[in-house]
Each structure stands twice: as C-alpha cells, then as structure tokens.
Length: 223
Ligand code: IYR
Image (cartoon, rainbow, N blue to C red; front, side, top):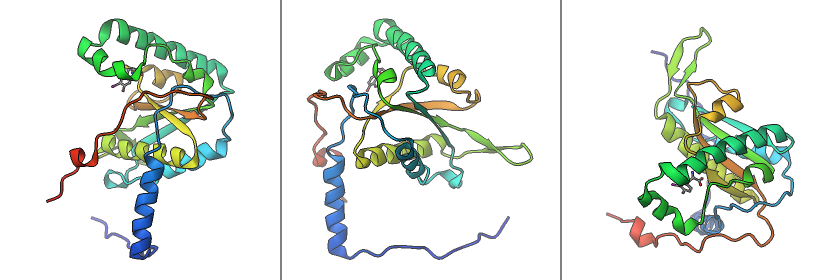
C-alpha cells in the first residue's frame, strides 16, 4: 500500500458574518434557476462551456477516480444535432404514446412536456454527460470506479449551478432510453449516458410551468 502524499490545504478563511451573507446570497441566486425548454438562438462562446465543465470536473468523486466524461456539442455540428434530435424524438414519441405508464404521464402533466424536442437543434450547446463504470490503467487493466453514478450526479449538479450562476439557462433532458448517444458521440459501449444538458439563453417571453419547490420545513429536519 502506498503512503499518501499530503499537501497543505489552501483554505480561504471567511469571517462568520460573511459566511452568513454568502450562504443567503447563493440561495437567492439558485432559487431563481428554472428548467427552461424554450431557447433563443443567441450564441454562447465555447470558453464559457469549457469553464463550466472545468467547474463540474472539480466535484468530489469516489476514490477521486473522476468517473465522468462530457461531450459538448455546438450548433455548428448541425448534422449531428439533427441526428440527436431525430433519435431522441423517436424514443420520446414511443415513451409518451406507449411506454410510459399512466401514473408517470400524470406526474409529468404539470410540466407540459411532450415528445417534441426542438431545443435539441435550437440551443447553442448540448452537453452529454457519461458515467464511466471503470477506467483503464496505463497497462490497460480495468480500474473499478466506486460510487460512479453518485459522483457523476454531484458533478452534474456543479455543472448546472455553474451555468446558472454564469447567467445561462439549462434543461436536464433524459431521452429514455438514450443509448443512441454512445454511437452518435463515439463513446465506448461500457459508458452510460447519464444526462443530456441543454444550454443557452431563454427565448424572449419564455414560459415555465407554474410550479414551486417544497417549503424547507418539508425537506429539512434538525436533530
Ligand atoms: N424524458 C421525457 C419525459 C420526462 C420525464 C421526466 I421524470 C421529467 O421530469 C420530464 C420529462 C422528456 O424529456 O420529455
């Protein structure tokens, strides 16, 4: 077993009042995040996407194995965009008309979603997030990734928060099933598509469902 190599923590101390201020300020930023399905064609520079994915990649992960891969697809890849939309809409049409149980469709009804996914071609960026259940050592041996799905969930949370904080809108889209993404995006078959994040600016006059978060007392208890 190797001895861990330790290094001083570069902790930035913040005084208690400032901690309080930042905690509430961040909450007021995040409480304004909404899932957006109506996008404008306004461009988003690639460096912004890179910075947000760099933030996602700072997430903690099981044994620091960083079991994620991100594929960012700009709008200039219009052929690819069309193929993604076609495949996603095919699955979604199946989902909404046959596969989804009535109970599921009832749960979705307040969102007003259907099989049509025009945002897959309109929004300036799509970010496909993949889970890598194992990695490879230099000698080619497989290395198991612990808590891979949980780790990618945390990284995706960072990504959504980073993009919102930067002033962009996102949509967590999960065409089901989304195995077609491996083939279209040249990812190995053992990687699992986790989420397709749609990124851009909202269309002018974009509408969102009139739904609310649970009050804090419903989701938090202290002991
Ligand atoms: N994947 C479908 C259906 C869908 C499912 C859930 I759970 C949602 O929160 C929203 C949509 C779609 O993208 O329309």
